[in-house]
Amino acid sequence: MKIFNPQQIKELDQYTIQEQSISSVDLMERAAHKIVDHITLNYAITQNFTVYCGLGNNGGDGLAVSRLLLKKGYNVTVYVVKYSANTSLDFDENIERLKKITTLRTIISEKHIPPIPNNTVIIDAILGVGINRPLDGLCKVLVDAINTAPNFKIAIDIPTGLFCELENYSTEHTLLNANTTLTFETPKLPYLMPSMAKHIGNWKVLSINLSSHYKHNIATEYEYTTLADIQKINIHRAKFSHKGTFGHAEIIGGAYGKIGAIVLATKACLKAGVGLVTAYTPNCGMQILQTTVPEAMWTGNQPCDFYLEGNYINTSKTIGMGPGLGVHPKTQAFLHLVIKATSTPMVLDADAINILAKNKEWLKDLPKNSILTPHPKEFERLVGSFNNDFEKLEKLKEFTETYNCIIVLKGANTAICSPNGQIYFNSTGNPGMATAGSGDVLTGIITSLLAQKHKPIEAAILGVYIHGFAGDLASTKTGQISLTASDLIKNIGKAYLKIKQVS
Ligand SMILES: NC(=O)C1=CN([C@@H]2O[C@H](COP(=O)(O)OP(=O)(O)OC[C@H]3O[C@@H](n4cnc5c(N)ncnc54)[C@H](OP(=O)(O)O)[C@@H]3O)[C@@H](O)[C@H]2O)[C@@H](O)CC1
Ligand SMILES: [K+]
Image (tube, rainbow, N blue to C red):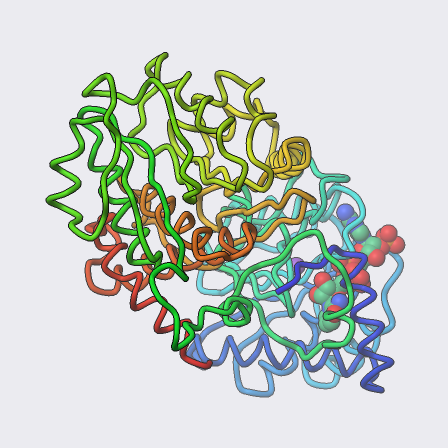
């Protein structure tokens, strides 16, 4: 699913109006019906609502929602927030429609803000994507008052005050803290940023049937990976395939005391469908590997029993390196040998990333299209610090373009950035997955998909989706608190089955 910027949202709106021969006020009515459907599903008829409407189309949405709720029998108090002399045409039309069934109240200045009763749900329709400057005056004081109130808050389209692009954005600005945001057609970029969670709350995309033709043809910098997107990737197994068809992966890592990381990655690699897998560890890992993962081969034969060092001979397998690796100086030199000896894309995680962060001059030796899977701290070690989440995304693009690689920046809505700066946010997963070994499982899955000849960017997107999906399936049995990395591995197969079911 593509994520549009405010300019593209306006164009999509206009394109739909022409293509579907629908008036903009009717499109607004369509949007209002979707909001009201959500509200009637979630709130009893006894619930009171207070709706704050601005003077543009976001305000128009608020007025239309108020009218539809009143018609259904809800108790709705509507305030028009008079921050300017200008109004939009669809706002005007909806004022006329609403006036026929209720009395409108107007807030004309910050001195006239009425107290907020505590038994009402607040609906924020003050400003939407048309925001073009930070909140000040009446809008700022009103939003501060709403934020102070303990009431549940629903934002229409975007919480008032939110900017969807880096331009104009500042962490100093006032913006409304919604508990739920009901947005139209596509998530907005900030919904996928950790720092914005407290302003956006739980968000839901309501489809209002905007032009598929426009959506299909327009290029966007950001995408949100849904099940429908994943189902376009071919995971079919041909009848006459054999294990050689599905590649040979080599998982390199493990130091004394950290062999479990390699066990998890190797098991996950197998479960994700690789034909063959070899675990490459120091000698201390051999017995553990052979006992816990009988399907895997082992190699190593290292000068030292406890960490990786010395020579490396590339045997044309698909490499995933990092789980439990450690950062011993000799292991650092070993990693450099591995990346120099490898010409096909590889996966680098955990200590492999920490080693590269300490030896940035080695990054230029990475095979093209290699996939790095840092968590936020590892990412910061690689790229340095940033002031906000918009800047973080800019650094992400800069890094992948400079080093011709793919970054999988782990977290809620993991961001996957391609070498040309395209960013794909993942939609699966839950906080239960913030647990030891979860990253090792991901390394195993992505390496497996690379070995199975998925294109690197596809392996990253699909791997992250499967990993999160396995986490969601696992949590239905274990709950989030008790979820472990082994539960993820157990659910990889089920995740594949669900993906294959035609939705
Ligand atoms: N796109 C779609 O598909 C659909 C969109 N829909 C809805 O339309 C919404 C976008 O509506 P919109 O474009 O009229 O903008 P909106 O946010 O109401 O702002 C209005 C005006 O406010 C002003 N203003 C700006 N900043 C300000 C500030 N800080 N403080 C004070 N004033 C400020 C500025 O005017 P100015 O003062 O600059 O003249 C601006 O023009 C969208 O979010 C969604 O809810 C749906 O109806 C269905 C389909
Ligand atoms: K709003």
